[in-house]
Length: 121
Image (cartoon, rainbow, N blue to C red; front, side, top):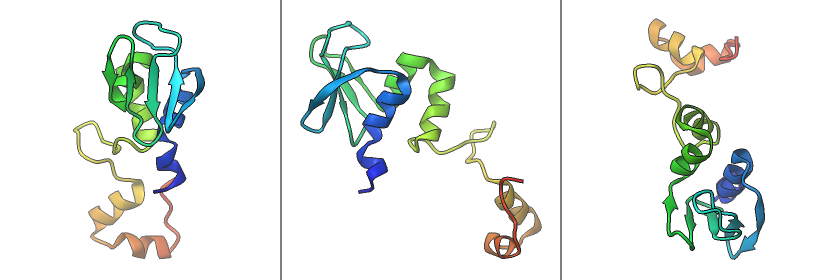
């Protein structure tokens, strides 16, 4: 398990602006976003799942982000932290520019990269 995966909950809490007040085992402790209890919210560091011991509300990482920042921005955040796979406007996985050119020209992606193709151009 990578450090990135181990700290997914911490990254999520930080990006959502949730003030972590401590840790309890492998969970981050914070004020609940639903019932405003001072320390009822727990965010699992590895999975990013959250729950409140006071109001008994549970959130997936996406539901937590959606509750804090709204759905359109939450989707972008989930893609950015690696929870969701990037998609195009039709719901298909998004390809980078090099992969798109390789598919259209029927050339292996590796061949284009050997000759210096970069997806950021």
